[in-house]
Each structure stands twice: as C-alpha cells, then as structure tokens.
Length: 563
Image 1 (cartoon, rainbow, N blue to C red):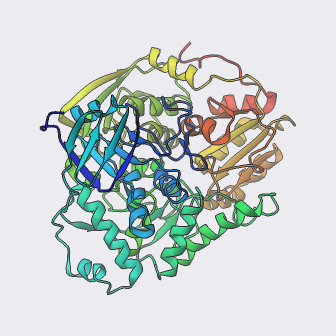
Image 2: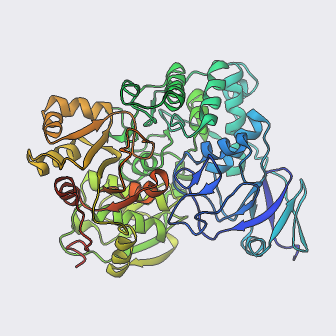
Image 3: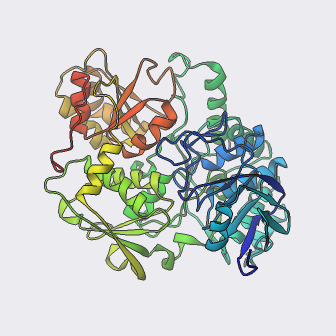
C-alpha cells in the first residue's frame, strides 16, 4: 500500500483476525447482542454477522450512547471484536475500549484510517495489527501513535489528576484527558449538570464499572439526573421479573444513587423542572436527550458515551470540543424536505429517521418544515428518531429551532427528502402483520401532553382484551398525570403506565410474552424494537395506535398525507 495512506492508533494494541467491513455505521446498543456478539439490527447490512474476533471496519458508530457499555460487556466476556477501525471521529465505542483497558486490563485496539486506506482495508480478507503497523493481504501501513494533546489543565484539574480528591476522581480525570486527547481538545470546560445513561443494565459490565467507581468513593459534584433503567424499581418483583435480572439491574441503579445521582429514571430529562437553559454547558448521555438539548433547548453537550458521563459528573469537567464550540454547531448538510399537506404526528419520527440516514455523520439543517408548525412533542419524536440513524449530536430546523437562522456552514452540501423517500421508509418500517398484540407508547418517555392526547383519543373506550397498551413515562410526568386525572382516564381504558424503564430496556415478562407484533408511534422504537424484542414492530400515528388498541389491527396503508 502507498505509504502516503495515513493510519492512527487511537488506542494502541495487538490483534489479528478476519476483516468484517461495512460502509454503514452501527449502534452497538440495540444493534449487537452482548450475549453472543451477533448483529441484531434488522435494518443493518451486517445483520446476523458475529463480531467476535473480527477486525470490524465501519465509518463510525451511531445511535445510543449505551454502545460503550455493550462493547465493555463483550470485552469482559471474551466476545468483542479483535479491533475496531473507523474512518471518522468516534467516541462511544472508543470510550468502551478505553474503559476496558484502563480499569480491567482488556486491551482492544482502535484505529482511525484515512479514506483511501480504510477502503483498501475493507477489501482485505484478514488483517494483523501491531503497536506500530497494520498489515493486510500483502500491504503494510505504519501507525501513527495515539494522540497526546497538550491540554491546558487548570491547577484544580492537575490536582484531581494527581489524586488529591481520591482514586475515583483521579481515574475519572485520566479517562477524560485520554478522550480529550483523541478529540483534539485543548482544555476542559465546567459543566453545570449531568445526565447518566450508564444506569441501564445492558449486561454485567455496567454494574461492574459502577460498583468499582462507587467502591473507590466516587461522588458527583454537579446536579446529575439518571436515565431510564431496566426495571420498574419499586415493583419489579411483583411484576414477575426474575431476580437474576431484576436484582443486578436494581443494584446498578442503586450504585449511581449512592454516588449522589438523582433517581429520576427518565430518558426525557428535558421534561424535568431542571431542564437546562439556552447556552448552558451540560454533560448529558442518552442520544435523544443530547439531540433535543442541543437542537431545541439550545444548551450545549457532546454526545457523551456511557461511563464518560459519570467521569464528567464526578469531576465537573468535560473536554472542550465538538458542539461545545460554536464552529462545530454549524450545519454541513442542508436537507430540503418535500412537505406533504396536512401531516399528522407520524410525520415527525419518519422525517427524523430519514434525516439521520441522509446525514449519518454530520449536523443537518432541515428546510421546508416550518409551515407544519411542529409542537415540542413533534420535535421530541424527530430528535429521537434522528438519533437512531445518525451519529450527529444535533440538528437544525429552519424557522423552528433557536440556532437555525445562521446554521449553514459555507461548505455545506445539499440533499433532498422526497415524498417517494418517505413512502419507501414508511413501507420499510411497516413490514409486518396487520394483527398486533401490543401498543407501545413512550420511547422516549411520554410527556404529560402525550398522555393527555392518548387519553382524549381513547375517549373512555376500553382497549381490546387481547391487546396490551403500555405507556412508559418519567415519575414526574406520572405524578402530574395523576394530579390532573389523566392517569385515571388512561387506566380506565386499560392502559398500563410504567415508571422508570423505557421501551429500549423493557423485557419479559413486563413485555407481554405472547406478543408477535407491536404498534408504536416512536421512530426510535420502530428501529430498535425488532432487534431488542425479537418481534415485528409497526410505526404509525397516535391515532393508528388507538385503532390498534381498540381493534387489534393496524391496516397496511400509507398515511393520508402520502396517499
């Protein structure tokens, strides 16, 4: 291979194995089964492939911040890829590999290759990585060593790094500085609040990490909320959740609470009274929350991977890079959208899903949507679906979101989403039977407005006996719904409203075991649900979900605005 090809060791190490290549990014959470290392994302080209022992090459990761936990679990169980090779900047899986090496002595090389070198490697059948080179099918490419950015640390930063505040803070600062180096950050920034995503029980590794940090004396030093967890914390035993899963999931949540995190247990922290103001520097994990915070609230947070979220919360410091900086919040792809007439609420998750596929690695400016007047809940659905198919931490909607006015960068390119694209995506997300046994609402956690709208649409009618209807929502929203009578109206219609857990972490028996097909109004769950639940998932409007709840059927048809 031409020596001008560049290759950098983000995390150095040795590995060898067959090359498993994809030109499409993959979310490890919801996309890879940690129990066997197989790709379970039914929409991904590598669906069914086993990653264990492979040299995995893909442009970057995408989707959930919890991917770092899945990778750590794979590393600790011996099921991880032999190495990860990217062509673009990547944080989530890199952080998982860094934690595996730093805390558990499990080294997994992570490389970043220039486009030509990346393309050449993707054509190879096998590869071998050393500390200084990568060799594959007759070519050898020297590796530049890991970055050692000259961080401008403050006296307090250095004191934490030197161990003044104990071993947990010292370890956290080591991890933060390592991530800052690979991101090219020159200094760290104070953050005013955190949101922890690593409290989801993706597997034993999440608990191992949290317990280790708690044992070392970790305590958060900024107000820190917690994401949805994997169980209804107060009721999992009576719900029949087996102790083999419920007990470690509860211990994981309790470990974060013991470190000073607030037991909010919601994946929609922007619905809390503590939601940040525009311009606030925060440190959130959970992809939908990050995108909503940056895009709609105008706050500033990188898409922090699981585990880095805690490190930042216990130090109060984050790498000053990415969308913390003005220049990285600009749109580098302008997407013109052919707006149909009289769209309903199903339009927004569909457009988010398509926008993510159209801008998988860059921040987009969506044009043509202002006339539809999206509500806050519409934007919530848009951001959540976008986060499943794009790695970008934010988007702009012309005429709607606060920074859209001058968002387009001078070098931004252009793309279009047509009605034909919408129809094709709708069919892709509705490839399943008409008969459904479960209606899933609340991915991300439902707002009070969504709960009221569902109660109004049901209008006191009771769901069909053979169809379960489950809403997941945060504790604050449930209290508000109880206070204004909305919760009672939903329960009278046979709707089950669950706190703490969310659809991306729900499992049997809370997830009804007899279910064969699911109806949802969530683009996020329509994407992740088939891999996570093993069931077919259909996407529709809230009105479609109510029809399914009352009749057990979700007719195959395009929405009226695409017909």
